[in-house]
Length: 580
Image 1: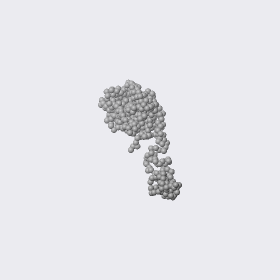
Image 2: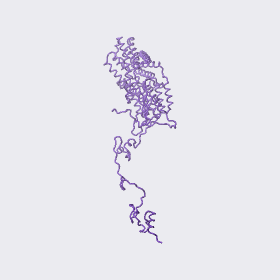
Image 3: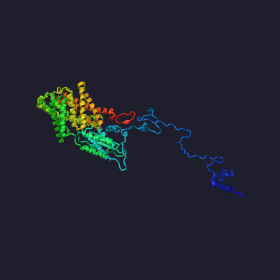
Image 4: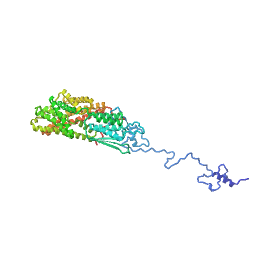
């Protein structure tokens, strides 16, 4: 039975929807126009090969056979080093000039602040770094509940420590270094301490999106107690190097505040008399002059204590303290018919005990290290205190000249001629430094070193002036430089402040005689003749301060200090600006 062709064709197309290539040509012929498609190849044309995988194309795609062009060289910058000049590998594709500037091929220099170095050097190194290069503080492993010390308590402890240091006469840079060391030891990264003459402030910013926390403290009272100063330095060393807890640090600070002064008030009065007597012998006084100068200085010290107890400002305390030595000198010349040299030695010895050498050295040190506001305030304080001394001495000399015309025999050109007895002067210089140590309330183990340092300073000064015929100003600067050098070496050995080893040792170099000559000319009405002496006194004082600072910087220059470890790296400069 023959099959229906119409029926078979419809069945084929209905089953597959396309002609069967294995059938006859008649069978492959489409039955109607519905089987045609625009994408179906005509009869006799083979089907194209099926694609292996999808490859979507774009009008921006490179045709086959073409290679991409080399990327254009990016525009250079004045703040990045070009790879062609440095000999390094070219900048990779996709790198930017900013990335090359902040991430050099050799990596960011590593900062290693070893704890074997004194904390003063470590913290000073970090203060002189840009904020972005400071190393992150080491944080101990804490549990989930332990969140570390509270930020307000850390800032409060930092300010209290800085207050004691600043009130004790420490330089602004060392106070900032101590404050930064305490905050850094307790994990505060972005912290900036600021020190001025009477104001301490510290600011901490947890992150770039958080509000900063700022605290401040005002220093209203100042006291000279180097024993307390050394104890605070030891506490800061324990915090920065030993890692004591915040509670232990607060207990240590409370013990420091409760400690009594190492010397009673009567010992300070006796030390003031010994200082003036030694200074009078340093300029040629006899044993009688020693006693007269000591009595006058002790009377002045007691009057100053009385004025302080009544709440009078420090300016008036210096006025009343300068009067008794000048009165004893005038009385020795007028009543005891002493020689002009002896009366002048008595007054000069009294002035030695009053010259504010400690504040002068601290002021010049702050100026040389870039703290100009604090330096200006300290030097202004020194100026006021010197004016108080001038007022007290001139008042006594003026009254004495009115009451006793014989006082006009005081001739600055003849008084205190060149006195050169090495043995007596060396002993007097060491006694003067010893008395200064007691007045500064130093620790007992530092007294011997400071006394020896003062004797060395006078030996160097006397050798340069009396043997080498060098003028007093450069000789004073050289001797003070050695004092600063030895003081810095001793402080590094003891991990303590350098002030106890330096301040007392510069006592024999203070310009007491030059100041006395200028004041005497002013009292006699010879203003043009008195100005050169006062200029000389100011020059000697500045020479002392600059010499002490230079000696300390020389010690830091040649001794190893922690810093940035890089091939061409060196010690960070102390100067913040370039002068423009």
